[in-house]
Image 1 (cartoon, rainbow, N blue to C red):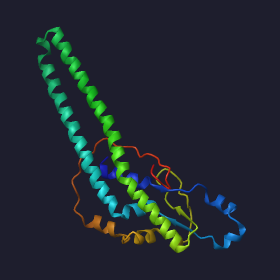
Image 2 (image 1 turned 45 degrees about the vertical axis):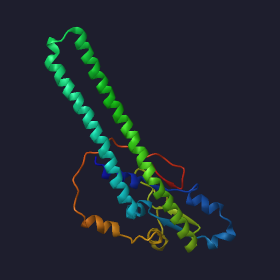
Image 3 (image 1 turned 90 degrees about the vertical axis):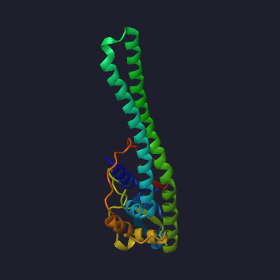
Image 4 (image 1 turned 135 degrees about the vertical axis):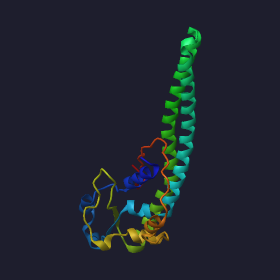
Length: 222
């Protein structure tokens, strides 16, 4: 799976959640406030994909992943070279030399495996580091749009793959996704047009994938 695909899955997994379900909120809201209650929703996945930061982060993650991959290739090539030399000369080696070479190869194998595990953690940390300001910006913009337009609650219409969206139905005029984008100075759909006009890039094998970590912020990263 390419890094681009993995990154898009990360975006698809992003979700905006609140502490209570809509039904619970409706039950606990005071009767006197029900008339002024205004509920909106947004598709967090869609908004994230439209933000120019998403393309920048994808490029940065690809570069970082390529660096790790090149280091891994170097380690593996070193192992292959020494393994081939051992196979060619094993028959003429003394027992102590043979044992020393076998131990060296074993240590190299373990080093490669450890590097792969560390690479997974490193990519994950880099991903979270790059995404955090984007999630913070999105949350703040949603708050601004909600205040400007009088929305009491804003729900996410796409809770990510593998989970049920918080909002299953709502009027079209309740979707504030484009309002959020415009508040950030982003023209809705412009990233789609840029992607369509761009020349397809060559596929570069990616470093080991990182599993998205959960967060306790309003905009959740899974």
